[in-house]
Length: 542
Ligand code: CFM
Image (cartoon, rainbow, N blue to C red; front, side, top):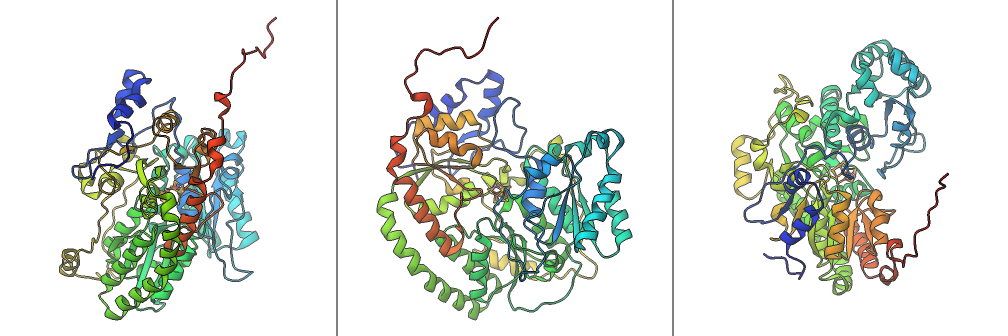
């Protein structure tokens, strides 16, 4: 299907975006800016280094490990080994919510733990300070676990956080201590940090508690981080359907959930980018199959529930899921029919992380809005083109830098939940086990897919397409709004949410309606558009 909007020719836009770059830069950026064809998906350059000098939206490996994957687990003390800035600027900046058990339930998420590395530690080594900090945290809180997160200077001076973790784990006896070599520079983006986090949690935590906690249909929810309460909404739906959530990686989670997660019978993945490693490793070691789901969008939430039910092949569960969908949908339909005439045909652009630029196109689609351009900050080719390209992805030096764990079936705990024949049968019936098709098959022909978009390119895109809404993060928000275009933060949801599930979809429809139909944006004159009087020098020359 062609894009229905009458906007400039995408190849002309692409040329415009590249025009001002020096030839070498233009050549490289050109490979990350592609015109989509859902039938014959073109190749996108992704997960490569950002060109120095370009303003990127990306974060670092430490952000992906500490902030994204481990941050939402409330009872692990997250101790940052590094200068205080790395902790302070990562402290409570992500709206991942949690629900401790009662007022005295453990929750360290509101604390900021750091070794507060100083020059003297950079010169003489910081391991002693790290041991002291672990002891102090242990004495104060007696946590079940402490995770140590390495920042750039730690890697540069060679502190061995893993040796310290081991020594202190043995010394303290009843506290699981593990380290992460997630120095900011470890990869080309936060994506490297996700992988590092997956590896260490898998190595040090998953599989430690074999207790069967009951439940007929047991799943883990992977890659759902409870931003704005999304996981609460998904938990509500699963519970209503009678599906038991053993562990959530890692929104609203505890370390015991991870320890016990190998007792589940299915892993469902929300964010493929950040956690597909965990799903694959758990399947190899314990025999748990995985499936991609998406609870962003009312239709896709319904579809995801149905697919989980179909995996378990249980008539009663399938019937219950249908009942739940039938109960939830009328409220969604009522809001949609009211809002749709006002949002239909409006134009959105999404440049976020590694999965939301895809997932949120569902919600815009439900509003009758079109996504004309989208991209990830740090997705890999499989997140764009689908997992079928994985064997063809070139493994570069940056990727080799991150450990690939050698995982084998556990001699005692490996128990295939389904035989290969059963899985093949489910697949033949349309249940896409171990599959992710990526973003591009869902985007129209002629839409622009842009990986690691630069600040300059986003400004140009806005200038050329004049979208009704632009979705990105806080760094982009105010510049875009000064251009007269509302910006929806899809990382933090601004102050709103949840947006997952059926209730979440309703919240999103209403927020977007307010934003795209507010007339205030048309009244804005960007500071640089104001009539300029002659510039006056504000510096003094002698
Ligand atoms: Fe996955 Fe995420 Fe995302 Fe991500 Fe993120 Fe995030 Fe994101 Mo911000 S894990 S890839 S590293 S869905 S923090 S909850 S919103 S960039 S699109």
